[in-house]
Length: 315
Image (cartoon, rainbow, N blue to C red; front, side, top):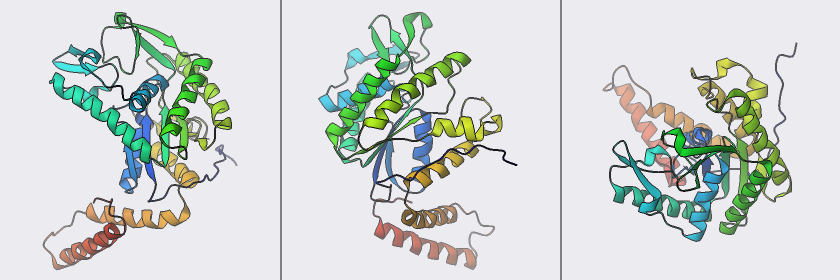
């Protein structure tokens, strides 16, 4: 009896290995994948401006990095005791106006340096719904829980999305013509927009993205959204909010991502990293016993040996 559909996952090249440098941008799902990469000590960086939900927010950051367009005090507003920016996530909020401007410009410069070195860029889009700040007439990355009357909500058309994806690819390749680009649609459900509206949004993203992926060189699609919708297809794979995939779902998608993008030779090192991580996290019954001290000594030797081979690894 067949109880589950299976999405065909193909192996891609160039595969990700420990020489690869990954840069991830987009929704909180990008951060989930980054956490997995970090656990296994891959070289990766994620979301210098925090979570960015829609393509225009990502495109704005990339344009600033490409054209050296800095942030200034005009890009800020003050609310609830903090200076904030509509271009960034709330985790950059700061009580100091000077410090948040420095953080924003540091993030733009950091984006540029990462893109120049990146072998793989992973972009995860969460929604096609955007909010325009009425006073400034600009699309925001985050509304920061400001009054709804200050914004106009709209759904990006398929044509608008296609143009944004084309611009994103063009900018990424201006930094590195050989970069491998991996697009994916976030499986996180944006139900604040509405059930029908969430599906409408995802369908626009999918419809706009596939023609671009099918024609652009070194550009690929990973079906994280489809894996959750079609293979998992059950609320037991969601957190209690029924919106975000839970750890079991993230682990499942990570396994499929590994199959698609990480070479078999690299997995030998991944297994060693995982063994060391588990050893470092081990809690002994008696921390001063001879057996435990010997265990720590051998573990330290193994860590040093791996760090000697891969100096960028930090345990």
